[in-house]
Structure formats: structure tokens, C-alpha cells
Length: 415
Image 1: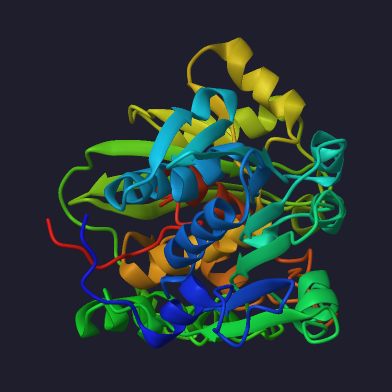
Image 2: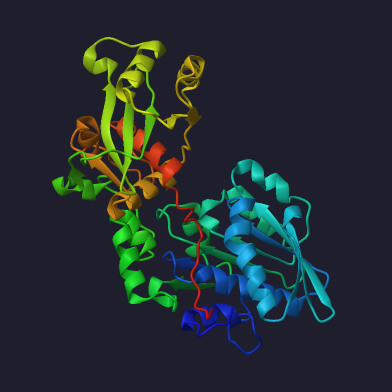
């Protein structure tokens, strides 16, 4: 891989720690801003280059939300680049580490995942010369602060990158807004700061998001989510008739409730697009009568009809309903992924790109699009009302259209 050019902001990241840069006195660096803006690659290369110049026999940490995401989004591409520019790398990713050598110097880089509050214990006890946090805003505060506390070696430095969340997020209030107080060099990135993105690709990414997600991921702003979760679905043109002809595959997604409504969506694959072609929606409050698990299973069978359903994806908390489906042995069932904010972002992107479409036969789903709103607390929390079809929509999208877009980068290179 050979680099054509870096943007001015990428160059600042690459050399901020160098003698004579004017910024070498900072104790660390924070880079935030738009997705696909070229933060990750230049920061990781800069981090390793600094480590190899400053230390020999030191220990460093590469941190992300999960070990898997660190390996996929950071370590694997970083190893390729390091080898291309003259470093020797002993790839020991199966042991969650890698050894990097340059000349007679050798340092170890450990990989850690900060998924939840319990993750802080995983990094306790180690002494570090430096740590890089990839997507710092996705990690719990306890994990980040524990990793920072591990950097007790003289001259150690901190490296953070992230995409924006809501303004009251702890990383924004405690680190970005206090960057000067903490003696950290702060650089804000826009999509235009990635020289490998063409005008066509920039236009594509701008069309992928709307509302607060557009302001965060395209404009790079820390803004609160307000109003409708899917405001663009207020346009009647976003809904369609059931396409003519057959479907290549069928899937049913289920949000299960007893007191709350149950919503099942029937999805059909036609010309590489998934259509929500029918639904089962039962509200005991609206109907005045509750239904048992077996009665909801009858509704599932009625929705499926004679179609060959490849999978039924069910709310993971509906253990009793999942057991009923398994006991009958008619459908292959699996629990859904239930990350709300990631799921909403995936649904928004899939709807705007036309990967999924909602047919006008799904009246309750269409009704909920007009009612599903964010809380007014300023945090990324949708109101837990009118969200049942929205949840089963999210379950389906996470299972079938998850693009693994957390942390993907773009880089200019000749091939």
C-alpha cells in the first residue's frame, strides 16, 4: 500500500508529538468528528510510530468497544500498513497482542475490549506507556478511566478518537470540553478531511443519514436527538405496494408482548430488496382481551401461511414465546440483537438507501412511524411507547442488514 497524500489535519495527527511541532508538550490527543473522515488510520500509525521512537520494551494498549472490533477495524489494517513502511510485526492477534520491532527496539501492543462496566477489571494491574482508544464514546467511562490510570510511565501519552454522540455524553463533557484543562490536543474532523473520499462517495454518505444522525455522522456535531426518530418516513412516498411476482426468501421478525402489543413483521426478498409485506399486530389494551403464547403462535402461523419461512427472529427477552416456537418445531427461531441506538441507525440507513421497504399493507407499522419519538432528556433514548413494530423492524435489520459499520475507515492508496 502506498499513500498518495494526507490532508492537513491527518498530517497534524501524524506529527503532533514530534520535536519542533509546537504541540509535542501535550499529554495526549483527541480526534472527533464525522464518520469516514480518516481519523482511525492516521492516528493508529502515529501512535505506533511515537511508541517505537519513545520506548523500547514498553507495553501499550489498543482499546475498542470489543476485542473483535479492535482487530477488524484497527489492528488488521494497521499491521499491513506498518509492514509496508518498514516495521516488523509479530502478529499474535489470537493472543490479543502484537509485537512491533524497528531496528533493535521492540514493544508490545495489547488489545482490550471495553464493552460494559465489568470490562474495567480486565485492564487492571498492567503498566502502560500509552493507550489508544478507538471509538472512545462507545466505551463505559469506568473502562476508559481505568486504562488512563494504567499509563503511569514517564512520558506516557493518551490517544482518543470517536464519532459524536449526544452533548451530555460523559466523554464530551469530561474530555472534549476539558481538553485544555487536561492538556490534550484537540482536532475536529469533517468528511472532507479524508482525501480518499471522492465527491460521489461524499454525496452518498450525506444521503445515508437524516436528523440528529446527519448532524453527528456527516457534520460531526455533538447534538441531541429530537422529535421523530424517523422523520423522513412522514413522506408517503417512502411506502410502497407489495411488488408483483414471487419472493426469493421470507423472514418473520417478532416483538413480543403480553400487556404491551405484540408485533410480527413478514419480510419478503424481491430483487435484492427486503419488503415488509404483511404484519400481525395485537394489542390487548386495544382489543380488551389478552392472548396466551399459544394464541400468539397461532397468529405467527397465520401470518406465515403456506410460505417457507427461513427464520423467525424474536425479541430476546421473550423466552417463553421462543420456547413455544421451538417446541412446535415448524420454524427455525433465533433471538434478536437488541442494541437500540445502533439498530435505529441501521434501520435509518437501510430505509434511506432502499435496502428495506415498507408496504402499505402494514398499517400499524406505518402508524408507529408517525408516533415514535425521542425523549426530551437530551440523551439518546426513544420513548417507550408506539415502538413495537419499530422494535421488530430493528430486530430484522440488525439480523439481515448489519453492515458492520462501526469504525470502518477509508485510505488513499495505489493498488
